[in-house]
Image (tube, helix red, strand yellow):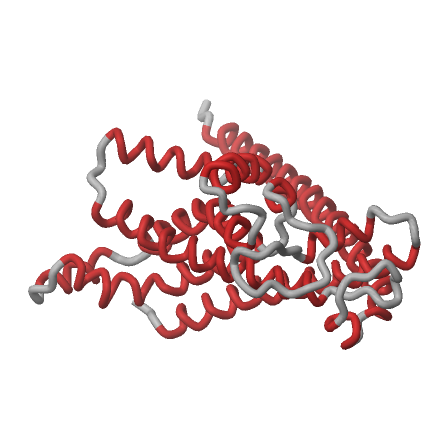
Length: 296
């Protein structure tokens, strides 16, 4: 007696079972995603309804005050921009250069693997660890004090592994025939990287850079560790001046018992969320532009 009909029925039953499992996990995943999105949306809507009445020009151009109706985020958002600017100057050139070296120039040996493993591990270390390291090295050893320079260098080290990893991943997406065509025309390795590899991978690199900076702008723990002020009523005049940032200002207002300060914190949180979403949207747009420009 032939076993072919029996085998066919077994395969059909197994296929039906797999389809039911796929449908079940699809439903569970959709339910989990929907719950997460609804929770996030409800929190954002609540924060927006609470803080929106305080979003005025006076709120942006006023210094912090003991009176909640006069308090603003002028020094906080200026301090955030200054810190992120220093972070960019520290992390972007060093991160991109390190990614290019590790991907294009470094020999593939045990030491390179150790470095790559450490970079991946550094990307997952809690941010408070960077704050403690910066407190011991930048503040106490280098005597940079509780300054914008210290904060920018601390956040630069925090986002440096992200930029290195995204740079390497962007370079890996470049097809090998582009390199081979460049070498066949007599170009050197650096000419190939400068004229072909970097232009084609610049979309992915810039996307990683913007996402890294969007993380840096919302960090609080390392800045508290290196001495960010919770109340400052003047603008910094140099990178060695004390500072505050939006997350620190929010923390200060939330810790106060008056309900009016909580409204100010919600308004500051809405501004910070808008800045973060704007940076992430910029990253998506940059990636779209470069993918549209460079096709292979």
